[in-house]
Length: 193
Image 1 (cartoon, rainbow, N blue to C red):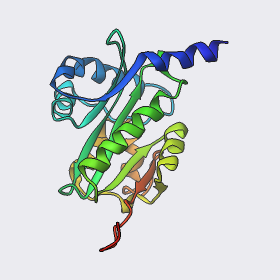
Image 2: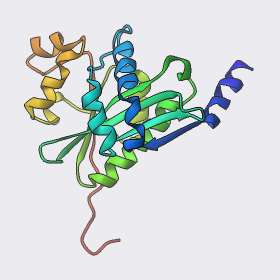
Image 3: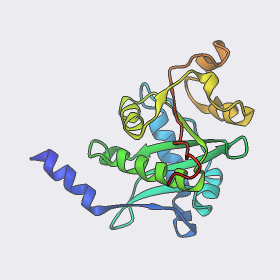
């Protein structure tokens, strides 16, 4: 019975592309990411409210809110090497909304947004979460070596706030506790629709 009640929570939640009207959530999202990063076996890089606000205002994120506008979850887009590589980063769900499938809904929404905004880009992610790996696999991502990801130094500098950064550095960016996953968009053939 509890599972059915929790699944009903999804009916009260909307997952939408962000805009300036969501700017008041940046601080709460930053705190939620920080809280989640302290959980065991979680590799999640911290992000400042100012950084998240840029993503929110640019429509480069999705947010999950209850009908009473309570924050449930979030994920944002990062672009590297002039849009050649796109990461869906910072996927986070508030503890009281976990286990109901919300992460999958958020991930699908940000995946569609990324594919629409960057149709030829390689989409990638780093994760320690089995649930996220499963969602990524369902979307068509495949595990890859870290060398298949962006070489942009700014991306790798963003990992410094993750609790697993020392592993990444010690191995010369060849290994981490995170799994690297990559999605290659289908190649359209000329004259075929």
